[in-house]
Length: 241
Image (cartoon, rainbow, N blue to C red):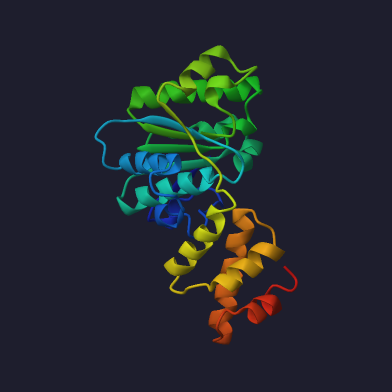
């Protein structure tokens, strides 16, 4: 019982789909930053001839799910079989969600923190890592905590989580978020004026997910009403946000 992502939608075995726009090009990074290095590493998975195991970790809203789903989208583009298992959603189904993955070239397990501390889940993850090695499957994991500093986790699992690379993602700074907002707007074919960004940034939640939701709403309403995005327009559209 897992979510397989490919270009064929009927292969989605559970009612879970990837977020629209979660691709590599829409993940904002400052050039030469540590986050840019992580993005480059993940993109290299699809050109490497070797199987890989990597875990990315970082605080909430640092973009772990975005990048994991970007990997799934990329796998679909290159016709590579992939299984995406978001444990925050799938843990209610039990460890059976990790079974039946032998046909997937790439396995993507999101939010392993959701099940750490549960002996059955930890044993299942331990077995999964062993199986992927035996089957020459690439494995990509995400966590909030540094996997090298996990406490109260089975010692054998702790060691296997860092068999491959371990890479930290950092959330965008307050200085970077307006740049990310402008970059996403330009990807969608329009430019936000500085005073609109300043208005949104001053009056609404500053977490990156909320900012992108605001951008989507402004873009959709601007297209529907055939109106320019100005401060008065933003004030009207976002009145109930």
